[in-house]
Amino acid sequence: MSKPRVIVAISGASGAIYGIKALQLLRGLGTIETHLVTSPAGARTILEETEFTPVQVDAMADVCHAYRDIAAPLASGSFAVLGMLVAPCSARTLGGIAVSLGDNLIVRAADVCLKERRRLVLLFRETPLHLGHIELMANVTRFGAIVMPPVPAFYTRPATVEDLVTQTAARALEVLGIEVPALKRWPVQKD
Image (cartoon, rainbow, N blue to C red; front, side, top):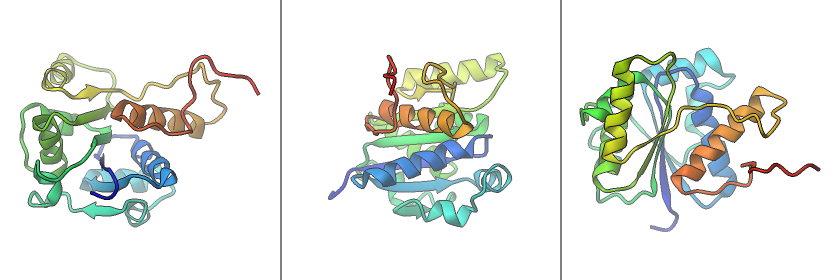
């Protein structure tokens, strides 16, 4: 593999901008090959919540895969990737991963990451939580996933929503094992 590969998935929860920002940050590095899967509900959320179209978001990735194509390369453990970021991760997607449902490419690729012991970071975007959500998060954590709700960091003194989104996406990529210059660290140095 010439460049390391990362899967970014955008599911139907609120917060598609996190996946979009992750794609932008990865593109800025120029050293990672990105593979994108967007659910139909994720495409709808992109339209409802952002200034982007799904076609524009697709253009941010090196390779796009169809949500229902469970025969795509991402569905095989022999397709080498560093890991996968699901940003945002809907309750439906979390549930599918927790029971190894594999009925769409997001869940199947996540399952492959778990079985191959690759990093899987889930920006679970639901609140408030009921016991079912908590149990599903516990299950995927036992399987090796990292559940990372997109909780904003205020020690960075964000001035805009863009600042909050960038910090969260950069932190998620770091958890995935990819360092991006946009990440602000504690303690924050004053200019």
